[in-house]
Image (tube, rainbow, N blue to C red; front, top):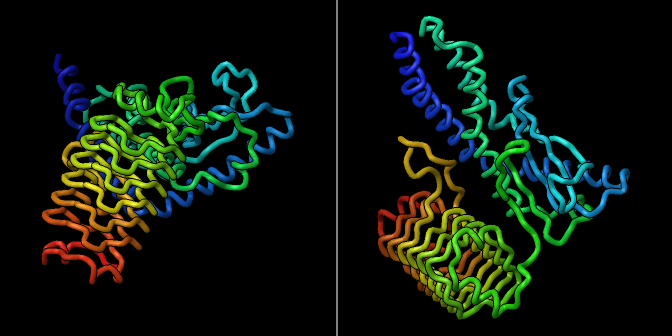
Length: 376
């Protein structure tokens, strides 16, 4: 009975406390080095594509429909932090002859390694109640938390710069999908090509239905969806680049990671939406309503880790003339190169947000806001 109580103390107190400490260390590394990590992942992805192109040519492989980046449990137990990368046809797991390469995820899983090493050392205090087998089981069990940072980086880096020569040379199916997860287990989409096989009117009707979980990662690129009523819709990680959404109702939407780059959202209403990691770079946003949006960078609560912290919202090069950000939380957002004439930021939280030096004459900030933003 005493042995059981000691083991329970280890699992219920010591493991969560140490897990939080190492996840916060990884979070700080993730946020503090995000530009370098994004660039490195894009370079790694280019090398992966080069290897896939070579193998596709050598083996006369059909067009690729899926690229899956998977954590291998056996590699993890052996102290190797390589993910296997498999390119398959649209048959996915039923493709008997995938082309294979690897991705090195040491940058994130080194924190898992340190965490498990500390647990193994500390377990000796518990009078032999925690075995080496249990420590190895913990390593496999705890990997899912650290893995989330790899998925988050892949999602962001691919959205920001998937195009490279090797990727363009890869023979691909129209609806190619990139997924990341655990080998022959759960995986999640981080990038998707293709467009829904619907007319614009059918798409508007489909979006108005607000079907749960149907629109994430969907491709709505280069479409005229203006004057649409899409409020209260989950559009996280969807792709709307170069689309027309002028005067559309997008209030109270989940727009986490949604990509609107180079789109027209003149007069659109996005109030009360969650826009963490959303990309509005080079958008036309004149008169857009961003009142009370939530889009802060980083973790929501450092006392209780639930998921990796968010990357900054991007407004780089956007026209925000007469846009309304009253009461918005945009800590860490990037406003470099934006047009900010008559833009309203009343009661907005802009701590750590980045603005161009040239824009100082265009903006009316409170003294607190002016002290908290970063001028570049």
